[in-house]
Image (cartoon, rainbow, N blue to C red; front, side):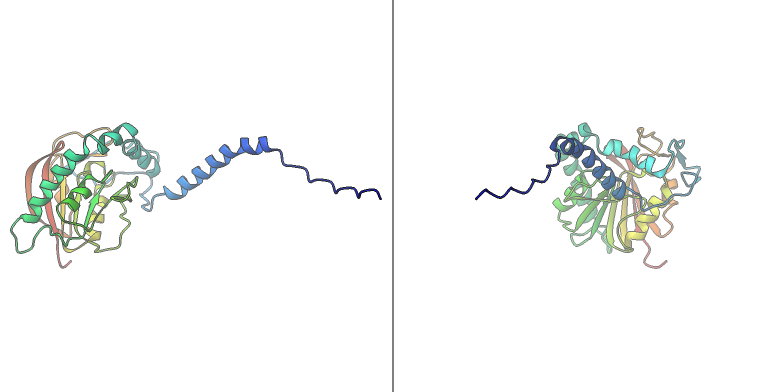
Length: 258
């Protein structure tokens, strides 16, 4: 009896064109993920106008077509592979130890209302790879986290300092040394005050009368330009520091009543 004819085999998909398409499909996926995750939660006024007008703060001439353009410019520094290697290796121990000494002085300062305690919940604003966060944890402030446009887990979460990813009254202590990078200084300060608990402490290291680098969006001509933006806080002290090119430490406490 003759054998039954076998059914025809389904035509195989051409493998080579599919393989050639995979890199393109992967690129599309990466672009989609980036565009979805990088859209800012803060919508600045249009046209893009840095603020505020102040005789004490000199805003750099705006060269950005959009807020996304400003964010990309800042990320050019944060994601620079050479700088990240330096921050993670040669600079790491030196900066962690220096920040730890500064935070220990704040923690150990005698006061009825201490500036920093081991029980404080702390935020570092614009923390890059997280040296400040590591320093806080080193001196015993275990509940510490940083934010930056590019996350660096486990120390630094993704966050825009113009729009913190935290609810109101979250932290007891906030530290930053990147005020000069703020395109909207008033918004930068308002977010610190919003996320600080009543009685919470903000510490900023700034340069006064000194022009920043090409990533700086403003130059602080007088420390009162910064202090005047804190509308819900009182100055605890203003003192000189030597902090990686920054010369002034401003310590403020958020009022317990509005």
